[in-house]
Image 1: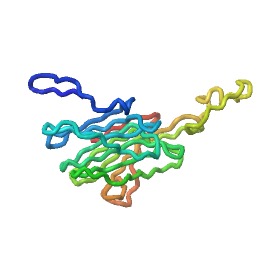
Image 2 (image 1 turned 180 degrees about the horizontal axis):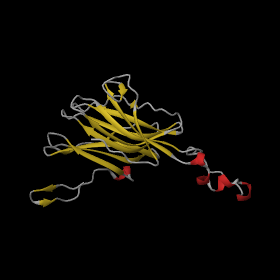
Image 3 (image 1 turned 120 degrees about the vertical axis):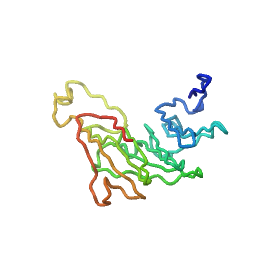
Image 4 (image 1 turned 90 degrees about the vertical axis):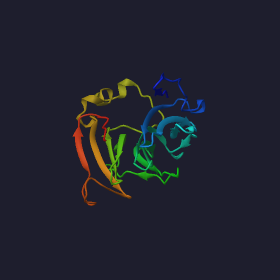
Length: 219
């Protein structure tokens, strides 16, 4: 990270430790008190995990905190900070053969709550590219791509077969209409521990169909 003050740009400061390399997919947000909150994806235990750090003018960088649990391969974190300085973090976690969207809350006393998984419409769909924002009411708005890729397997071993044994569709998957990737932008609201898309807790989720992944942003 690098700060710009009245005197110009300051020297670079390392946010992630060398032991967490490669570290990337970073996002940062300021709270109302001027404290900087950062999340990033880093290496840990032979996979990727989500980490958090905060910076203040008074005490500088705080310790690195691991946000995700060591049960999946965790990608693409994002965060939102409310008026009290509490932080929400969202990320995609590869668990049991699919990418799931996970949320976690850190209160102003630096206490992390348990993970919350966002419910999905399709058992075989992937939840990726999260974006979140906190409303004045305290509700958390979540947008993400819900992606389906037919015949897309998990991260298992690669099996090789002679080309002569493959069908035309296997050789050129894009020719098969059933093989086309589909993507829906999904928006949900978390109030307490209840998900909905409007003031009615029984309302269905809001979706917007697209032809490909869209990297949605909500603010």
